Amino acid sequence: MEAEAMAIPTVSAQSSDGSLVELLCDAGLKRTCLARSLDGSVSTHDELDIDDMRLVPVPAKNNLIRHGVVLLPESATPFESVPSLLSDIEAYIARYVDLTEDFVAIASAYVLLSWVYDAFNELPYLRFRGDYGSGKTRALLVIGGITYKPLFASGASTISPIFHALDLFRGTLVIDESDFRMSDERAELTKILNNGNARGFPVLRSQATPQRTFDPRAFHVFGPKIIAMRHTFDDPALESRFLTEDMGRRALNPRIPLNLHDRQRDEARELRNKLLSYRFATLQTTKIDERCYDPALSPRTNQIIVPLLSVIENDIVRRSIQKRMAGSERVQKSERSATTEGQVLDVVMSLVAERPEPFLPVGDIANAFVKRYGTEYERPITPRYIGHLLRTRLRLQTYKRHGTFVLMAGNHAHLNVLAERYGVKTANHM
Image (tube, rainbow, N blue to C red; front, side, top):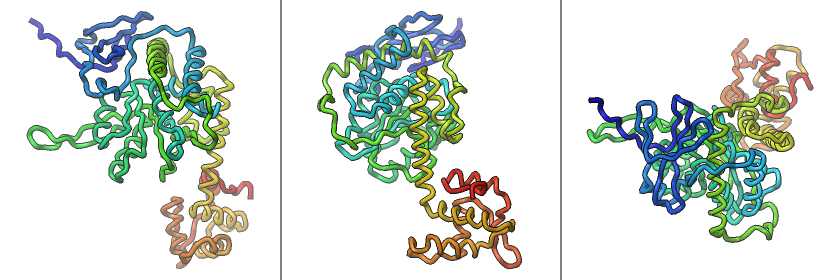
């Protein structure tokens, strides 16, 4: 007699016949079941036999579900069209959160992206930045509440539960960075953010076994993330992954209610139900739209935002997002050009334009740097210090030639790439 298949607690699944399975939970958080979408029809089940597996819903008594830490749809409600659904999301966000008009469009598109994020290999993050009282938490609650399987991590005492919850539910992480006050916790959060925007980079952690040994385990952290914070991250690479709205720069719109009421929660649940139908209807056909690549933007920026642009059908909204990201790139380049390594590169590019020789003595670079920027620094600027910056910050190799350290400056193509990244004049524009 064939053994009965082991029951597998399930949140989401895709089967070989093309069907999609998602966990549902009733409004009272008393009962869960599985919704299965196949060939345009949706059915609900207490258990499912698919691909030689027996799938059962994660029970409603799960602590995260029971306490509303993870929000799930109640059913799959039909929607009229993607533009009408996007319009409903925009109206909902504008009712409860005070954002600039273009960021309402960005946040709404990000909600759509979150429901089909697993169709892509890279994702941007959504961020609300500002001081307390600027509306960051409101944005997390309202917008996060309609994303795909949102996990509200605000107030977590430690970071460890987040790894486990993300690995189980594989939805949208909604998090207030200021809740993580200890440096160790912030470092762990940064690991999630560094590894979580691209598929295939799980976080490895050791777990104790009953035999008192340590078993390495990979935790899935890829997925959409919405974060609120007061400041910025020190890592420019991490900073480049965010679509950011700076909160509190203007007086609060008097039409925005100061307190959320039950109607907002009902609206959020209704939208989650429609968005589940959106996922069922579009996930299999969602893919990168190569028409969204903008040659005026850097490859990194295109990589981050093209998945978002691919779920938007409105060209005006697409161009608005591209324009906003172009502005962010200009700000980033301006900030980079003002760093010490940006100033060193500026001096190098000036010397390259002045001299035909393929070698630049590091001492000459140091002297030119002192003349141009020396008054901005209290520390002595020595050739040794400049050589260190060239090698470690700009990744430009120096060589010892006739007893003097020099920089190989003949490779203009490589220097121009660096100059473009740091927002300084290239050799072609000198």
